[in-house]
Image (cartoon, rainbow, N blue to C red; front, side, top):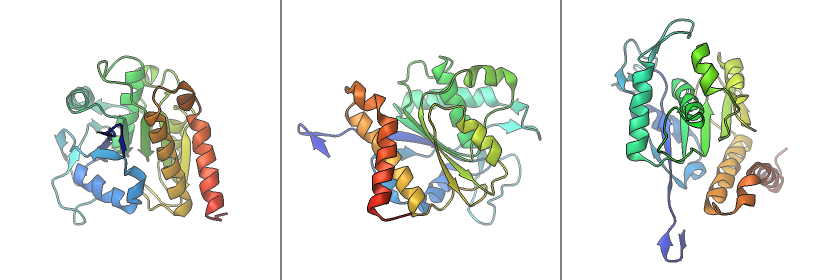
Length: 247
């Protein structure tokens, strides 16, 4: 769309892939979703900073190379190369942004939430505008107390949607991550630890959530629009479902 003879600004989302996969694989995973959902955005899919240190679960299904953002122990309580990863992403976002929001799957969602919490506390991305949105797919919190005391110190006031699978082994930790955000939208699906195929109801919920955020951005000077975005999401979802006669 154009306004006043100028092309409307396209918003950007940084998409962070899961452990031992790649940006290309996450791009492929998201083709399961209706392309209209993110039609207003430019989406970037970088590869993680480290080559895969072991076997990837997608070997034989999707071609290498594979990457990982950082390493961790079996209990997910100790992390290796995390600070280097955070520095890399801080520089990437600052150099290639501004980005309007983040999307992540699994390890990418864990890392995205950390960046958002750290930005809110002034630890990273100090020169970058505050992120406005976050799409978490099978994301969780970090377990290290020194990280939690900073990243999740207060409710993170970024508009967030959390896709949580009923058969996902990280279902409960994903719900705990959602609770770290202010007024999160939770979309449940019957699948496991994956970027899920979305049914019509879930698709409409996600599209309406995105549309409300885009509308808020288009009226960035309108304080009331930003203040009432949560109600807009609820109203849009209700109207869409009523119009389509979905029960």
